[in-house]
Image (cartoon, rainbow, N blue to C red; front, side):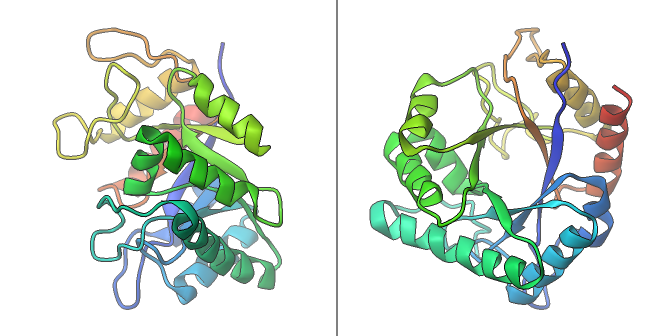
Amino acid sequence: MTNKLTLNCDMGESYGAWTMGDDETIMPLIDAANIACGGHAGDPGTMRRCVTMARRHNKEVGAHVSYPDLQGFGRRAMDIRGPELIDLIHHQIGGLDGIARTHGTRVSFVKPHGALYHAMLGDPMILSDVMRAVASWHADLSLVVLATPRDRKTVQLAIEHGLTLRYEAFADRGYTSRGLLIPRDKPGALLTVEEAANQSIAIAKDNLRTPKGKRIPVNADTLCVHGDTPGAIKMIKAIRNALDKM
């Protein structure tokens, strides 16, 4: 069985005079843009440019929310939780959604970034805070979470919040035997173009396996590739081509 996967990409991560990624080239190749909202990267002008590109190419706009960590690119853990975290997420969604609505589109999903994404995986209270923030937004938004062997507690929590989940797998990152991402500083964390294309096909067929051959049942809805990955454009084209041929 083959799953029809959408392709999402982390974008809008430039800031001021500092440029990261080639958003203009990447946008036509993907289905959904996870746009940085000023927490780990991004600024109002970059957000506007990404939003208008997404609208021009008829792509979904997602809020890529994070801890307030520009210097660490949102990859440093922070002890922020409860109302403070909810306010922080609302602030970032609001900034992007305001720009999106001004330009004739809107935010339709939220994807936490970096350390917040991983904190959500490891701490049920932070996961609940994130879900509460997304569910309490004035318009319906779905929440992107890591597609691991189905976590009943996550599903139940989403039901309690009345929240729709999108399960995400990663094309360009290596996996542990538990279905989690290998930390970036460990061997095997970042895949080559060929490896990423092959892994994309395996995920679409729900046949992702560890190097030792153990199957990881991720059952994903959407596939992520990072716009800041070295050779990202070549990789995204290879992944898009692999998926389109299935």
